[in-house]
Length: 449
Image (cartoon, rainbow, N blue to C red; front, side, top):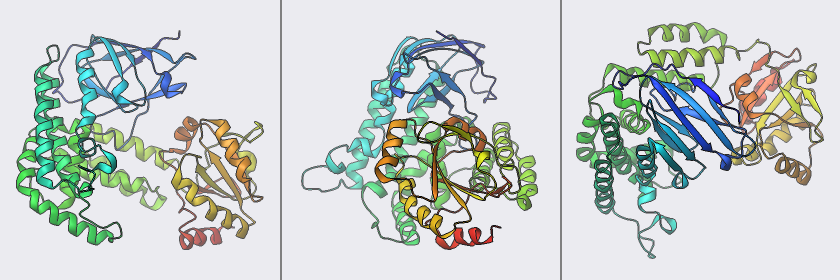
């Protein structure tokens, strides 16, 4: 079996201090049904830009991996959270269900413990039919929810205290993770308790949410103060999520470090980059990048900006390999000569399927433009059956492409995604409005020569 050696030279807070060493992991990722499975960092900058790395899996679903680490760190494989320390030697069996994850060897105790983190959510606490307390369909009151949540929190803290082989760093971080989950449960009562109507406007919903937050402010704020004692706690996604929500609400008061505020600013800029970047705005993004002080945030934002810059208007479109329904191969550039309107989708993506009728209508109206569907389905049979059942519209060409190739060339992070390319194979916009936004997309289509 092919052995993979990855040297991970991460910049990580000095909170983690241990001698550099090798971590060995082997076992099965068969349930993922993929040739390579992403192993994701969990640090402060991962939501800005994910430096992708993959574990290669053989035909039997097995793998071997060696990591060179300078310190303990968290990683995610699927929904499985792993804590790895120099010297760990683990045999694992991981799949899409966290509960079924198996660990054996040096480092097993911490990782077995981490499986229990999924219990700390309001949805798991009341995981009965329709998430209700009883057959009368009566929702738990906030006080009932808090009582049950706090009881579960105590159990979880006791489980942590009972561990015998984990280091003090793990204990401290997991204690903070538990407290962050506790706050999240309180905040999520707004959704669980149905304190807003489904048809409320965004403004009304926010008003109701803030009114609820005011009632729990005295409970939440003492916990928030514990979460901000150290910037190192920002390495935990649960801490980042809770602080982000409380910061955005303008209800809660808690100390905000320079690193936290910089994280909020960088996230805001990053979300703007998610919509693409125009040449006229490029300099302002570069100026912001130079102002970032945190090394991890700066590195991540720089990578994202560089990636987005390759997709600015006027740039030559990245070329990719495509396959048609009969398995014939061609390249996207083979379609140049006419403007291209591309829909990146998948059969399992409901928002994608919602856009397809409008995409077809546009194809019938703008006959001078070539409409192209590019699916990222891994199950080719399912894709073919979908097209054969519904039929391929006359004005649309349908192809299949490799997901990883699209992620690399077009920075594809979510679908549906719509792209416009001119007749010379240069980008008009790599982040076009969806067909359902009729006025916005038609304004662009009308301007294409």
